[in-house]
Amino acid sequence: KQEVTQIPAALSVPEGENLVLNCSFTDSAIYNLQWFRQDPGKGLTSLLLIQSSQREQTSGRLNASLDKSSGRSTLYIAASQPGDSATYLCALTQGGSEKLVFGKGTKLTVNP
Amino acid sequence: KAGVTQTPRYLIKTRGQQVTLSCSPISGHRSVSWYQQTPGQGLQFLFEYFSETQRNKGNFPGRFSGRQFSNSRSEMNVSTLELGDSALYLCASSLGVLNTEAFFGQGTRLTVV
Image (cartoon, rainbow over all chains, first blue to last red; front, side, top):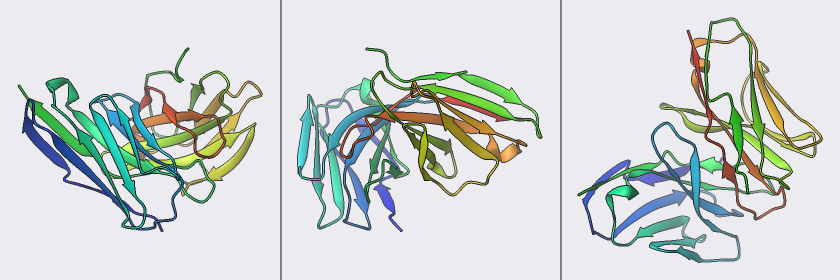
């Protein structure tokens, strides 16, 4: 059974710092890996999608990488801002299914 | 381009009642998936519909059911509500072809009292 782990569960950093969020998974036979952001009480906002044949994706200050052989993905946030404060979730699909398997998330707080 | 729309945004129901939640996917998307989010369990997959057919189902009791209409809009029904069904219910829409991005609605907050 696929398990997705995100460590740490919470992270607090000063504004302007570069940071890395980690996501690990137990079964390397995955299709997509997607990073989401969730603000309190709201839905999920898609940040980046890494498809099975790709190793990384970039959007603005965000960069996500995927290493299937080691079962890891990282989300790099450059020059963090207070508006980046949210819970970040990674999720993956496998086996020809649209079903997303989620980690529990990392709650990020960026202090002004 | 309109996003994923979920209605209603908030619901309060009494134990034993039933509830129906609605999800309108992004235009052109044929797959709709439903998830339950609770503080203890995180996000858990309920089921996925594609072209009016249930393609996948998670490990939830039969009280949870769904359907999809010809215009890809989907409804989720929970019968005989229990206190533990209180959660944020999220739906996701995608093209339904492998390796495509999933987009989520704002969710329906269900409180069972």
